[in-house]
Length: 122
Ligand code: 5GP
Image 1 (cartoon, protein in one colour):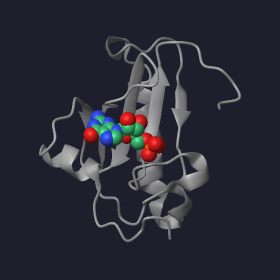
Image 2 (cartoon, helix red, strand yellow):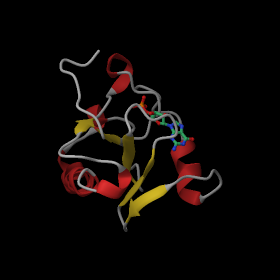
Image 3 (cartoon, rainbow, N blue to C red):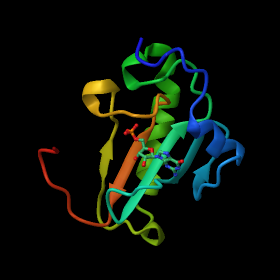
Image 4 (tube, protein in one colour):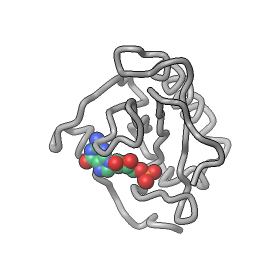
């Protein structure tokens, strides 16, 4: 499938500290950090520490139910963090594959905020 052959991505280097990142939150399963090229005043990415086949959301099966829930709960908590620049609400985005505009083949949830968002997205 799409970029499935890639064993690792830049996100692994962020998690290992080989490349610096502003870490916002992490626990045993998830890792959250500020996007280096923010598309909004507040822009955080939430990823599973263990990609475990989830190069993209389209790879998800029932075995991923728990980690998908953990990612969304973390996104909800981050979206309420005023110190990160979030206001009242956020735009939660998962870009899935080529048509979704995904670039990094390690599932990630975008949490965008600090301004009001437009709908539909471009
Ligand atoms: P995608 O287009 O795959 O949904 O989003 C990938 C995101 O990762 C982009 O918003 C991009 O700015 C972010 N990103 C790519 N490389 C790095 C990096 O080295 N550090 C950080 N913090 N974010 C990155």
